[in-house]
Image (cartoon, rainbow, N blue to C red; front, side):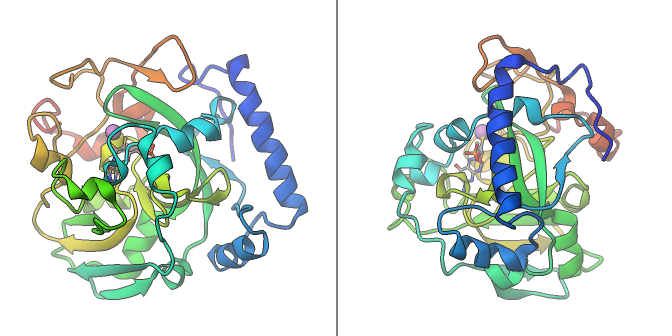
Length: 318
Ligand SMILES: Nc1nc2c(c(=O)[nH]1)N[C@H]1C(S)=C(S)[C@@H](COP(=O)(O)O)O[C@H]1N2
Ligand SMILES: [Mo]
């Protein structure tokens, strides 16, 4: 694919280290014959290679920009997390999700679709070709990362499920299991965690379902075994450890919107012009960097997504 460097993504020498580690690992995987595996290969490969990795096709940088030189190191991606089911501090999920059981795992697809069923996650993933998708990940509290995800376009999934003409929204629900998820024993949020997208957003080529990071299966704290990622939205719009996907004609209630509607709207589009009531959204700190960066409209993906919101007042529909 065409690789272009835009002013949004200056190459910084301090970021090169993580890239070369990453490239070394890719090279290793290539030699080990693990590159280019489709999903069916994922389980087999991870079994045969133990904790080692699986990775996908040729790297795909979402947004047409060269992002690799500024990948956020694995260490940060896997120890600085928001996953309130495992605690509210950034370092809690890595600690508390260690024994979280993600096998076997089923995903129930229901609502306004022709193919509702409870799928075993492995079977469910078979029809999709995994790609590596490098995407900006912007949290609402003004920190960001650039993460090499492993996943597949959400549009592929939606098409496979065959939504009925009446379907307007897709809702995602996280596992409810207070025994395994200590955070669910307190009413920090309304459990289970629910997030949702408009159907056109779910069909946008940038939206995807992720099963891995850095060529490895998703660590538990990052939302194993399946989470979704919407690169132009704040991080809270991505639901982790998904057990249910529902197609509906009414706008779903979502966990953060229910807990604090004044602070978290349904859309959650990254917008430097609309501040969160308690902090500015104009700048962000890329994890691992000292100086703040200017935040970009739609997280830098305006070209690909702005048209979905034309005519909407983004101050009201935040
Ligand atoms: N189930 C669930 N999903 C969740 C959250 C959560 O607390 N529970 N936090 C969200 C928020 S606020 C962010 S910023 C991202 C963080 O994803 P990461 O830990 O992989 O960076 O997950 C989102 N998905
Ligand atoms: Mo977040």
